[in-house]
Image (tube, rainbow, N blue to C red):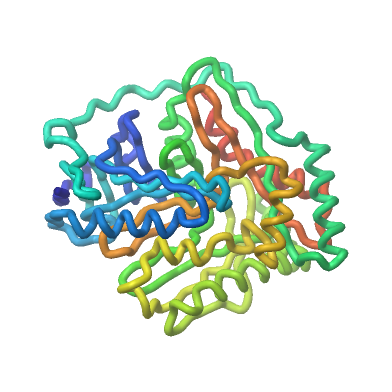
Length: 415
């Protein structure tokens, strides 16, 4: 059973302040969104069928649920949070239904309590008394030390050079190469510390955490709401200097960069092609705009469409159709993902995979897990990736990857 009630919006001026340490989930932007905790039901899935398995499981949860929703906004009633692997193998992914969800959208706020969830004939969940929570203080990480992941900078630049040679040979048009960085602390890290800092410092991004995967992504893979779908495509990046005049000049340079415009065009085309079979009409802008973030600027395009098959295709299945876009994989997709497996020399796990939420109607928001990291105990694994095309320079791509580590790296600082 799930029960959603309206609450005073003044009670949720800081959603992160409500979150305890027990299985927290977050999806926040500009102080609004969803937070939750506890586990009423969960599915762990893997492999090539991870999306369809999760979608089928969620449909069964919804079909067997008794829901009392007094608010009726997107994100009310039953809501599950998911984080999905980038690759089919091993493809470890998760979809979880929290015991408690608190949300805010404009001047409307609500609380959903799940006291049981019936899946495969078995009841899961808690009693109403067990949904009470004591939010403990959040301690900063201590003694954080960073070290190289699978490849150091020189080796990764070698991989970029290899990719450029493959592109010049005509094997493919674009590939996105990622690298990782390992942070180790003196003691177990409370994920609420970096989450709070990311939400504060990157308010226009979507700050997320699901089952150990967290970050602040600027890229919305898709939002499906009441028959409309939107996807924000980011590809093409330049680092900010912090000087307004200089950054405006850099933004103009980015908007004219043939390398970045080429990379961006591949990404937009891949999203539009994936959404088209599900839409009765679409709007794909002819030129991108420049999205300004605190540390970098991106070329961005918002693709919009009217969905004609929402009764049979959920937002999660749309996310499957879009993944991996050229923004995180490459073009052609199959060739690019094969090259990633060959030369990246690491398992991306859930980095660059879909992350977000789905409601009982199949609507939801799914971002791409970028500017992100995975956390386990005292260790955090940070990720960053760059789009490689024929004109890419390995040293410039390394500098771009270092800029993309900044949000999570800074969020782990104790000061």
